[in-house]
Image (spheres, rainbow, N blue to C red):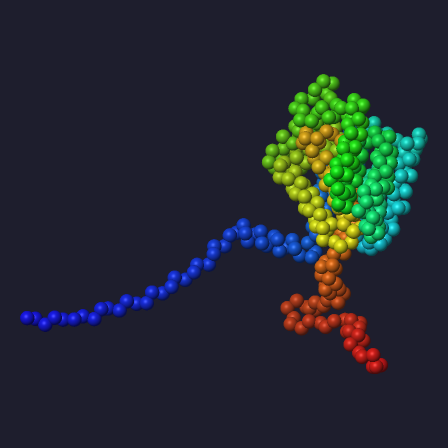
Length: 452
């Protein structure tokens, strides 16, 4: 019998654990994280407010020149007439922006009452025959001689923001805002006084913006829903009466969504604004190539400049403008939400409400979604009276963004420009040391009190 052969079983190699695969990198999630980190940086709001406002102003200058050339030639004026006036106003506004951005908060609060008194005085002067003048049926202008005019109601917006913020901040310091009468008095009566002076001249659009600023301040101060709804209902009732008793305002209300000019060309401006936007397409017909500005679209360089922008720059251009306004508004909300100073919170919220509401009213009228209120697009439309207080208000936001604790610390950590030293010659390895005065200053601070 053959001997049975026993084989030792072959040893299997040990099973190695499968290495864990790293999670797949999601580009969208990574982009969201990077954007969020960039937005949380201390100086982000400062740069966003400064950059977006300057871009809107520069693009507005370009579009004012393009949209106003034909109007100037029709009036036998140079083609750059309106552009030059707007450019001068932009330069003055830039100086006001820099001044406002460098002013301390206490000085802004000190300007509240003088600015309110000055605005009321000028609004009263508008109603005096021989001083005030009417433009497009609205008695809201004062002639400064020559081609220059002033609209005091535009400065009333800035005055209401500063005065209302200072009033509510002082009442909050005294813990009086828990009582409804201190929330409303004297804020609501003074606002109604300003609204009355504006409505005497027939300017419904500016009155809407002032009402929006009032509601924004009440919202920021934490007004109860019943109180807020009561004031809103009262304002809506007054507005309905003013619209119902004026045929021109009723005609504007009836032009919402119009696609035909209607009887007596009542909706001519609204319809041709839609025509301009529709003919622009995705990228527009080209800068300066608008057809509607050749006399078909009234107020092409002021109230309906957004329509000309859509015709010449297309959907891409209009969305870019809206994105800049959205960035500006969001940065203003961030400044108002991160501060501990009640005046800064109310003033930043008031300015943001003012600019955002005015942009919504203007764009909504051009799109046919809202009645034509006759308000310019902030920082964009032609008009020095609207541009100057708006740029001062942007300077306010920049000053408030610089006053955030984290932003102040980030600015303090920066070295002064004159203390930085660069290489004397490109390519040389040696770098010059700090200036002598800077070195001596550090030595002086390093000495003990007993040294000489």
